[in-house]
Image (cartoon, rainbow over all chains, first blue to last red; front, side):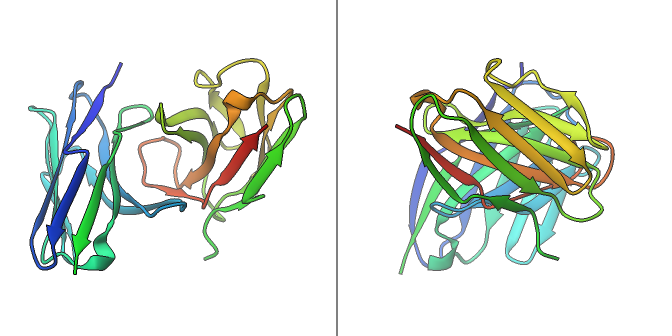
Length: 109
Length: 115
């Protein structure tokens, strides 16, 4: 059974600092990995999808890397802003989505 | 595009009552997924459909839960009878394609409270 772990569980940084969010998974036989953002009481917003053949994916200030062999993905958010405060979830896709518990980010103004 | 639409957004019911949650996927998407989110267990896949056919329902907790997809634009998740431990946020998601590993787009969720 796929186990997905996200560390740290919570993170608080001052505005402008770069964010580094980690995701690890136990079974490297995955198709894709997807990063989501969830605001309190809201649904999930897809941020990035990294296919298993890719090493990284970029969208604006967001960059996600994938190392299948070591079972790791990292989401980088450059120059954080208070609006980046949310919970970030990674989901590993083998034949279904398996989610980590998320990292709750607070960006202080 | 309106995105994935779920109704109701909030549901409060009493133990033993039947609850029906509804989902309209993004037009043109072939696959539909039902998830449940709780503090204790996080996000869990309950069931997924491809071309209106249930493919994997191994996540459905027990026989009290049932899901249908009568056509490409509508799905329901029913709980009968409901219990307090069913209280959670239920999400519907859809994706384009025939495999669950395509990018999934989530609805806003239905917050269910069973008293």
